Image: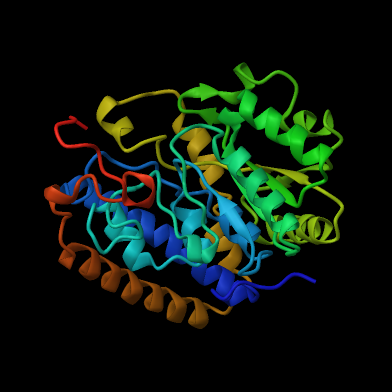
Length: 330
């Protein structure tokens, strides 16, 4: 049996609410990028929400996740406070990591969120290590590694698949295949298939409709059950799509590598209307209003939080609080 997480993803209403929260959070973040409150831009998760919600609905508080540069959805779905995540994006001390991690490195270890990661594929060995540690401690925790199709050719991912298979570790590898590694179509860069990578290591691999929250949840439930039962890792390839660009800089650069028709075809499969269709119209309006209030509170909290004091720039940089010797330029 899986243990539903405290964020309430065990019900269709809870899953719809989280979908709406992630979508609204990303739309708010885009607005704050345009206003300058978020510097450096973000990698929007809009369109891919069903993957984060469907997977995290199968997890419990004892489970851990590693994320990617496009990680806000994963972090929220695992239970992070949207106020503190937004404060992190705006570089404020009220953030999850005191404003030092930013968009691509947000973490909350108390919730099993071992961190987003700006290095492609780098979350895989961390997840494998977390799974091994849980088993050594006699715990039934499962580790989930989210990654994109761009990571499929990274050696560290293949090494992680091998180790997880050899040691039958409780890991769920989740490939969010949105069809593009930045602007490069996956079909022109990946020989074979995503599920074929896992199958080569003897890992059960399933291709899932990543625009369908319930399909992702069902596949994740089975994978998590296998992992808790000691049957080893599972690989999910979630076919999904990002409605926005790879990064917010893309609009300014006016890149043209996708057609308007392709984007609209995928928008017709938007996971939010699909989830809303299972609820009454009145209930979705209530949940939407709740989310709007929560996001307004998040924006107020984030922008009211102060920026870090430059005098403390080296705090938390070294293990155990060590600082460089006097006279050493950091």
